[in-house]
Length: 257
Image (cartoon, rainbow, N blue to C red; front, side, top):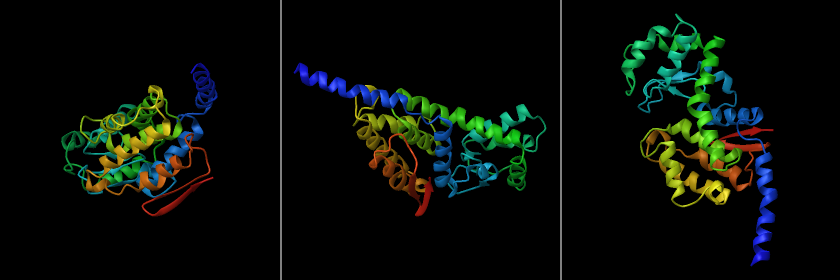
């Protein structure tokens, strides 16, 4: 009994050390990979920096979706972004839309935004101050909380990315399909490494919960960003999200060397 226990403990030390030594998703190279992975799903392109100017209504009930992370006029994060930009650069081309963004928050309405808001968004996207504001809001609202929770759960870069991609799509509100609810659903069937669980087993449970959440909404019912991307890396045992990476989203193939 003692020998078996000691062997288990000795065997776990190198694994723990390797996990601690491996860079997390906030490592600059890993973060760049994360941005490309999300962009492949959100914009069908690895060129995530080209998405500062992106804006359209994709018909998901969230109004306009725009920018590098899909800020939405109906969910409050676009309002926060434009407010930050106005605070940093008063009188910018988007500042005049703040009253309208406050009015349409929580709806899919374009009231007060049409017809010029999309063109003005694309104009603003040429400004490095607006690009930086997008970066900062992405990190504050989505990236940093996901990485922080992932590390707290003992997850390596792939798990941290699974959290990030989930919070990007679902947000972290109080509804049943929010990131925190997805995580709680996973915890019913598996424990993360920080609670003594197996990382692969837990991530499979989390991705199962994520797929369930996606299927609750028609606009998100295509689960390929999980099935033919994150699941692929997990099956390969690539918990540190090391390149080369090959995956598919919506039938399109992508590669990071």
